[in-house]
Length: 451
Image 1 (cartoon, rainbow, N blue to C red):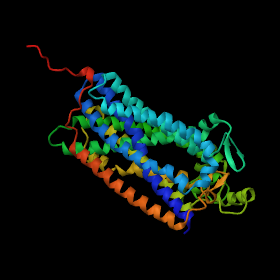
Image 2: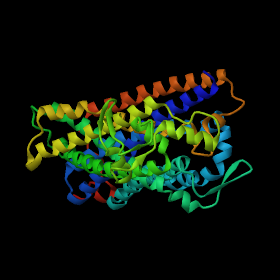
Image 3: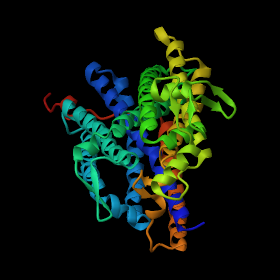
């Protein structure tokens, strides 16, 4: 094992850990904004209580996401300086827009929302949480646009060994980004929906004997709807992504399916040895008889195009990540659809369903993690497809001992942060939503001094 291997491990560990917080922040922010909107329109106390309760969970997760995200930027200079030199002129614009526009908007209005409960008018305070929630989604767009450029670089030229941007609009409207952004945001809503459902399932079980679970039932129903609709979005954008993968990243598609040779009417492999004829060709091209390129044939073509080397990603990880993503994601969405059917017309949640919602909490988190592994490992051995190999991206002056030291420190730090996150979330969930949030200034009535 050399410095490159450890640098990849370090970036993988920190990125996957950080990515656990990102989708929950994106989806939970919108859910909290929806709860506060319901309170604004109906005046019902339960919506205000739920807004405050899930708002605290959102803030805990947001803070942890910010802390873990900072490390990502330092790694570009620490371990990946050659990569930074090559992509800096292209990445500078979308990352600057993310920081100066989206994150500034998100953090500023979130601060106003936190401290504005008893100071801002009701409508202004509601606008703050919506601005913060929209800001997190806009932030995701710029980050994913930069990431999509690594898979399908557009709007650039290479000058003196560096990529120079020639068309910002092309970078921001990259077809890979336009498919990837709604797919990831849809997955974020599934993660947030699964989180809310687990919390509501816990409290519906605790209040089952007392009959005080009506508030949690309402929140769970809203989360069921959000998760089911997000599942439709993820499926539709996943189909678009598969067709783009066929055109832009054929090696990733072949690896995800375990297809070794160019095959007409290519089958879809459920597991090794169990195939559905012609399905892969149909999913990739809408033509069940189309030819899909295989890894071994692509390897020979890439050797002729780019020179000697192994251009195949880790077949095992890519193949199984794809299936774990699908199975765990569909399980969460399927449970949501089942829950909507069983609780229609104000029917109560069965105890077994509440328990299933609680136990299903890891499913969407595992699904998005597997999807991220598929996306990033499937691009290997490139950091920028067709332009920059991962082996050429690592910092030349970093030693194996230095990377090992930073990897150990980051792993220990992130382990401590994981414990802190779990403790804080668990403590707040168990505490419940008994506390009433203070009213905005326009809704408060000061005690009269007149007798």
